[in-house]
Image (cartoon, rainbow, N blue to C red; front, side, top):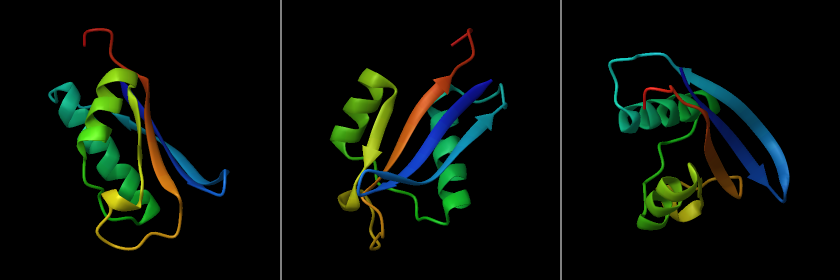
Length: 92
């Protein structure tokens, strides 16, 4: 099972959070990350953020990244969206 934690933060306070599970074993890790992010955005009623080079590097290095206002095309009413992998299949 692949699980990702999504958090909306504003002024150092947690506005919303959710844990998304992706159980489709036919997907590779990258597709699981994109699927989980899509589900998080759907649950929070957000547009999908753009993956900037800094996001890609941070996620590859730490399994976690933050999407700030420059990652969103529309205006946002929070400081950042943070995603973090909290569980992965052992076979990955």
